[in-house]
Structure formats: structure tokens, C-alpha cells
Amino acid sequence: MKVLSSILLLVFCFGLIYAQSQCTNFATQFQADYTILDNAPQNGSESCPTPIYEVGAIYMDFTINTERVDYTVSLNGGINGTVWVNYTSNIEYAYFLTGECFAINLTASGVPAVPQNLPSLSVYNGEINIGSQVVQSFNYTFEKYTMLFSLLGDSCIPADIVIYSPPDTSSVENFYNQLDSVDPALFIIPQVCYASQVVPLAQAPYRRTRHGFIPMKKNSQ
Image 1 (cartoon, rainbow, N blue to C red):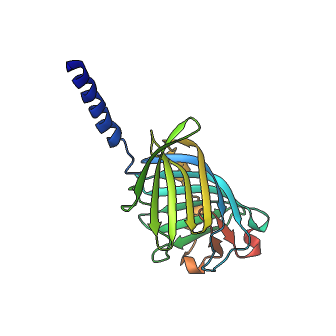
Image 2: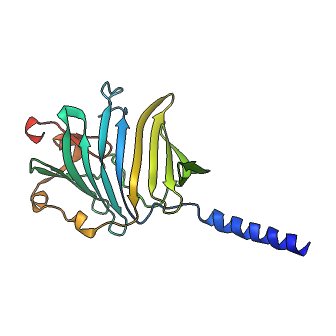
Image 3: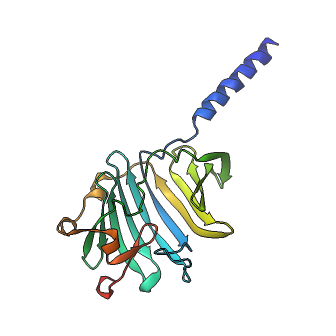
């Protein structure tokens, strides 16, 4: 009986430790490669007849509240570029391989900041196995959309994000090759970007996808 009580106590204690391991924040720093298939409406339109396919790498550092994304977008023959976003100043720099760079003020643009905390209304669905990885599954509803996302259980780095407005899927993003550190040199912004005049997003010469951008003028392609 005493042995059984000890076993039950160990199981109970392990259960408490296990419960405490549930992710409540994204990892403080992380980087990952990603792919996106985006069928979401663009620029407020009700339909997007051509799905947008995007691949790239994302780097996030919440200690300086800054994100970097290197991307290729499938439209217009393929657009390549890099984006830096400072969520403290709400300034975004969009650099294209042509050497052009645009500075965008995201204040009141409808582009949300990326908080380190998970959304307060997120519902934890438990753990699932994807191959050899254990991920924690969540869902979150906002406006007419529902977001399903999962985080690596041992690091709280994103594994995948699905956004949909029933009955159609709007966007699927998968992350891989995740690491829990970022080289600070990756957040050094080219001087040409600092020389750019800061304009509101509505005046930017491109339209935004999830991470990348599709230039609206031909000499930016």
C-alpha cells in the first residue's frame, strides 16, 4: 500500500510538472524556414483567384522586439526580398534585391504587432505527434477567422499555422529547421533603408502577403 501511494504521488507530481510545461509564450528567440500557401483575400477583396505560394526564412528576437523575413513570393514571376519589422517603433523596412528599400509606418495600418505571449483566448488542445516531434496544439478565433497553430513542445517555436474561414482554408504555413537562437547580425538593416522616407502602408508601392511583398511598380520586380 505504501509503495502504491508512493507511485501515485510520483505520477501526480509528474503530472504537475508536465502541465507546467504547456507553452504560454513563443520562444524568446527563434529562426525557422517556412512555406506558405495563401488563399486569403488580398487588399480587402472578397476573393483571390490566384493562390500565393511563398517560401523563406523567419527570424524573431523578442528581446529587441524585431522580426526579419527573407522570402520569395510566387506571383509576378517570383519576388525576392527581405523585411525587417521593429514592433516597438512600428516601422517596417522592405528591401528588394534590386537595391530598393521602403520604410513603412505600420501604426494604424491594421497590421498587428507580434506579441510574445500567446493570444489570451487561445484554447489548448493538448499534445500531438508529428513524426518524431511532439507539438502542442492550440486554436484561436478572431473576427470571422479561426487559427489553428502548433508549437514544438520542448521550445515553444512555431511548427505550423492554419487560418481559415469556414468552410474554406485561407492560409497554411509550415515551419521547419527550427532553432532557438538568432545571430544579432541578421538584424543589421542596410543604410539605404534608413535613407528612405517613411510612408503609411497605404502609400507603399507594394501589397503585403503574410510575410513578403508584391511590388506594384514594374521596376521593383
